[in-house]
Length: 488
Image 1 (spheres, one colour):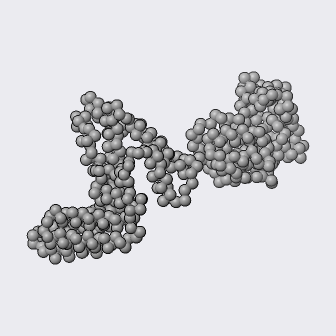
Image 2: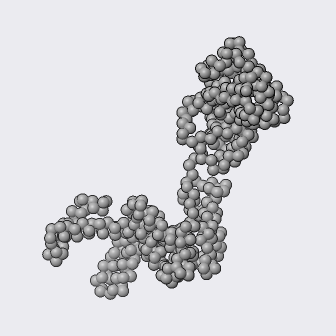
C-alpha cells in the first residue's frame, strides 16, 4: 500500500516551514511541488533537497480545474511507482487549496494512504499584521468564487488567488455588487518576505495597483452594520384580526371620527415622553401612536380607500420628491433654503388648491399651535415685523386693552382681548424660535410636579388644605422651586 504525504511550504520564505515538515524534507523523499513559484523553494535548492514541480501542467491544461485534476492523477501515479510521495503546496494544505481536495479524493479511491501535515498559511501572517481575530467572524474564498458569496455577508472577507490584474478586475466588479465602490480594502502581497506589502485602497482601485502577482490576497473588512430589518406586518395582522368577524367588539365599532380623540391623546403622550426624556416611555407611546395610524389605515382598507402599504409608499415617495438636494442633483446652502425648496415643491404638487396664503392650516389644531402656523404663513409673504421690539409693544398695548375690558365688566370683550394678548405672545414666541404649544406644555408639566410636592408636604405635616393660608402654600411652592422639583 502506497502513501501520499501532503505538506505546506508556509506563506513566505523557508524559515516559516514547520520543524516537522523540515525533518521530513531532510530525509530526501520523492517530492513534487504544485508550483515552484514560491519563495520557500529557494531554501529547498540551497539545502540540496531534490524536487519536481507540476508547473508544466499549467501550460498544458485549459483551466485551473483541469490543472488540479491532472496534478491529482500524477500524484497517484507517482506514489504508486515510489511507494511514498510527498506533495507540497504553498501555504497550508488546509487553506484555499483545491488541488489538495482532489489529491485526497483520488488517492483514497486508489487505495493509497493519505497523511496531511499541518502548516502555517498566509492567514496567520495576515491576522498578525492587521490585528485580526478570526473568532470575530471571517470568510475565506478564492477570487473565482466571489460570485457565490451571499449579498448580505456580515463577516470580514479574505479573497485568495488574486494572481493577476485580470483576476483583480473581475474580483473588484464582483465585490462592488456587495460593497460601496469606495469601500476601503487592504491588499496583502508577499506576506512573510522582506518586501511584503500591505496597502489600503478604495475598492474601485483594486485592479490599478502597480504590482499584482500570485502572492496577492485581499482583505475586506466587515460591512457597516445595518439596522435590523423590521416590518409593520405583525401590527397590521393584529389589527386585521381585531377588526375581523369574531374579533374585538369595541374595535369593530370604531370609525375615523370616533378615533379622533385617541390619536390626539396619543400625540400628547408622545410629547410628554419627549419632555421627560424617558426613552422607554417614548418607545411605548410611539407604539401607541403607530397603532392609531394602523387602525385608521385598516378602516380605510375595509372601505376600499387605501391600505397601510399605500400610506408608507405615499410618504416615502413624498420625502424623496421633496428632498432633491439628497436624492437628486439640487444643491442647498442651509436649512432655510431647504424649507424654501420644500414650499415650492408643495405648490407644484398642489397647484391651485390653496388660493389663500393661510390655506392648509388644519382647523382642529390646538389654538396656540394654530396661531403659530397662521402667523408663520403670513410672515412668508412679508406680513410681519422686522424684529421682536414692536411685538413687545403690541403685547403691552393688548394688555392695556384687556384691563379696559375687565374694568368695563363685559365678559365677551374680555374674552376677545385675552385672545389678542395670547395671539401677540405667540408672535413673540415665533421671533424667539420657540414653539408656544411645547413651551406651555412644559410649564403645565412643571406645575404638576411642583404642585405634587406641595400636596405631599401638606400631607406629610398632617395638615389640611383649609388649615393653610395662601401665603403658607406659597412658601411651600417656593421651596419646591428652590429644590428644582421641576427637574426631577
